[in-house]
Length: 107
Image (cartoon, rainbow, N blue to C red; front, side):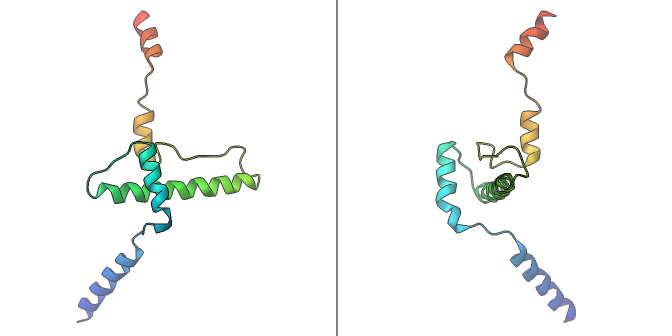
């Protein structure tokens, strides 16, 4: 019986600890998706929305610190706002411009 209650308590804790989406940001989310031509299939929408909200809050906190003189630059939301840091690094660290390719072929 004690094991049963422990399992129920653990499940309830996990359910209430799961991040929830801010309904006040619904319109902002839809505008951002439209502007950047983003669409998602199935459960990916919730995952991307959660990442976007997390990144938006990080940007807002950074800009608040900027207004207090803690940073010399401001941040803004862009088309990478629904990505994890790891996804962003994979995309951006693999960048190779046409100019650098042309220079390598001349050598």
